[in-house]
Amino acid sequence: MEQSFITYGHTVIEKVNPLNYERHCHGNYELLYAVDGEGRYIVEGKEYAIRPYTVILIRPYETHYLCPERGTRYERYVFNFERSGLVGAAAELSMLNESKKKGCGVCFTAENVSPKVRALFADIDAVTGMFKNPSARHHREQTMVRTLLSQILLHLSLAKAEEGQPEGDHLITRVIAYINTNVAEPLSLDGLAAKFFVSKYYLCRAFREHTGVSVMTYITSKRIGMAQRLLQAGEPATEVAYQVGFHNYSSFYRAYCKQVGEPPSHRRAKEQA
Image 1 (cartoon, rainbow, N blue to C red):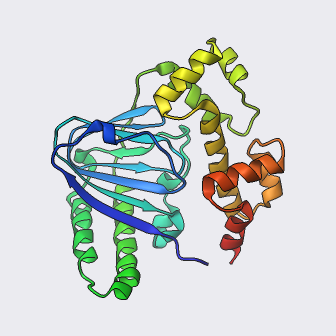
Image 2: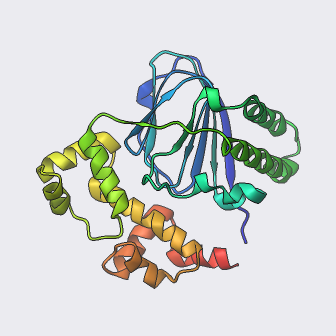
């Protein structure tokens, strides 16, 4: 089986510009640790306050973005990783599972981020500067970073998570929750507009303003995320297409390749290798 990836970055911005941050989603996990900074972090319509020592875990295909206070100093650590890249019990943590609340991230405030967790983040800086030889750095550094990230997640799993608040337009927050609950069912603009008693034109405009993507693009990304999990579990791609709400395999195949960058059969082959 191919080695699962973990990417890591530690950045400092002396005067942050909110316009540099856009709503987005992706097919891997993300862990953000704000060492310094003020602002808001939005995950699937839920809003969390960003303060020094806040940690936020984003699951695959949860739409999210940072809205920092303009002109303030912002320092952060960011990990992007696959679950299979974690070590030992960390890969089995329940907080990595799809949320029963249908996607809203996991946030830990400074009061619940222990000194041990902060120290582990600092240790990663030391590890990444340890190896001068490029070939040694790639393998040995990755192994040590995997271990440290796994320890961080294990410690966080023992801490109390923060409840997020609905962001802005409560209508779109409710629409997102409904889509996430019924993503494998037939969904259409007309049907959603009728259910929430708005015109589809208003729904389209408000949804894009709130999430940065169209309604149908959002639905498709959620379905592909569900498909990846089913393929990873060993389900045949031809059956997965219908399980996640596509009407035919060809439309599923095109959407999957566009979003993931490879055919659905490749994902299943990797997991079975």
